[in-house]
View 1 (cartoon, rainbow, N blue to C red):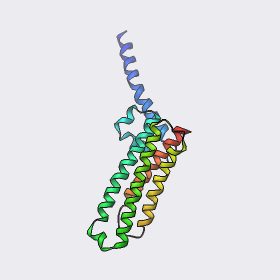
View 2 (view 1 turned 60 degrees about the vertical axis):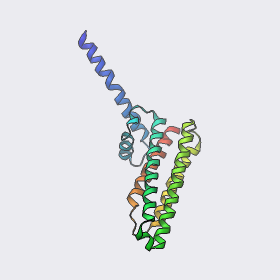
View 3 (view 1 turned 30 degrees about the vertical axis):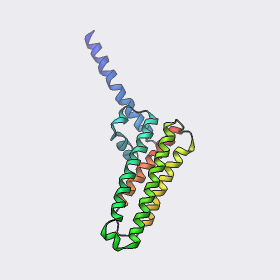
View 4 (view 1 turned 180 degrees about the vertical axis):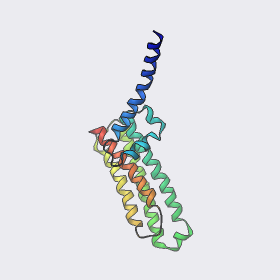
Length: 172
């Protein structure tokens, strides 16, 4: 009787981990970079117990954190002496910083709508798409300049697109 009981306990303890893994995989099914989507979600410990709505929130928060970090980095570059020597580069950086401020605000709006359980409202996804557009504007504005934020910009775009893909699964 005891071996059966122990086996039952072991099996039951393994089930939640498999269900969580399946929810994360399911959430990322529409992402263009599924591996990055899954790994970024799993980097947040809260994903272990999150449902699909919770995973959408985590994805948006990851993109928001990245946006605010990048905004600070870009603002620092804009105030750098090298950027001051090139007015076009400095203006491009200030514009890019403004774009990321807008992106962060749009992600906050998306989180607010998501927390009000209005995921079926198109605004949740539209704000995330607008944040991606802001990042692309930043990238376009800095094109041809010797300022390296391209990699971080691509990471933000990937995080935001993952959030959008998860919202599509949620609202699908």
